[in-house]
Length: 385
Image 1: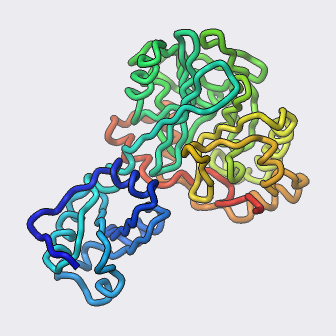
Image 2: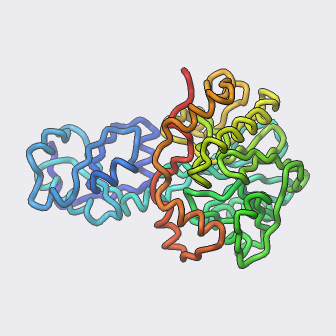
Image 3: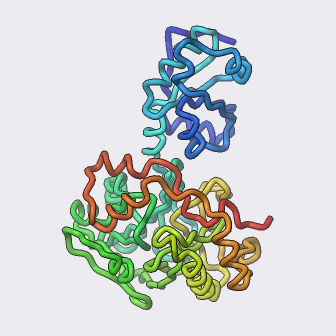
């Protein structure tokens, strides 16, 4: 145990993520409330949760028993202030310690990008938000670009990345009305001139935008440079759920993930079973595509296994072999999907209302609405192996 009470380092979210990815010896002390920790925390590392208000009088004996004395401890909280105070107490007690700068809010601002290895001539970049498992995509070809399922919190990133590749954003596309994060299609339209695009059935849910937008329906196409984006209506998760295909890449939104299938209850909880039947029918259309189709979903969960390069995609043929839900008959599928759905995303009703244009939170309020896990899959893990 090494005391260093005079210098409490603040580790950035990027540095903590690098340590985790590199399998370094990371140990976390999360001092948020237990209920908050249980619903949303950093997975994949050794961690202890001990609420800050129980640490005001020092480090209790039962916590000391859980803390390592031969490893660095990273303390984290919601915004970074409480974690620094606790880290100081730990340092005074002789522990090797740092704290997460800006806490889980900082973790939620972490956004990573990686180009996908595909057969399509267009460049496809996958964006990953580790805090919530949100995935978005940038498609670039011949001086033009489209972003699929953009997050409002990161609109500047998409425009900058397109510009670095000599392209102008022409479309900002949503696969459906999201329930877990605030969409960035309208803000991108306002900031870049890109055309916001919604599936027509999604717009029919009551979209009330203060800006122009276009709708697309099953069988339509959009052009980005020389690349064609084919529109494929795949309802089930929502009535408007739509996949987009560019070459061998199928952007499945929340219809099909690399570890599970969509939950069917976020648009109308009372109609979940009927929506599950619709989802089963939609998945049959997806399964009819070539086995080498690259499934590129809008989310990943902790149950998902990343590719070697950190991306989350899978060959459709591989998913057919590994995901039991894809070989179920319709009644078995419905029972499986509705049997054990996770908690709904935090603030999902307000997020939906915002994405329909019925509410208008400012940037900070919108960011607060989407903090937490996504929980858009029907179950944490539908892979059989």
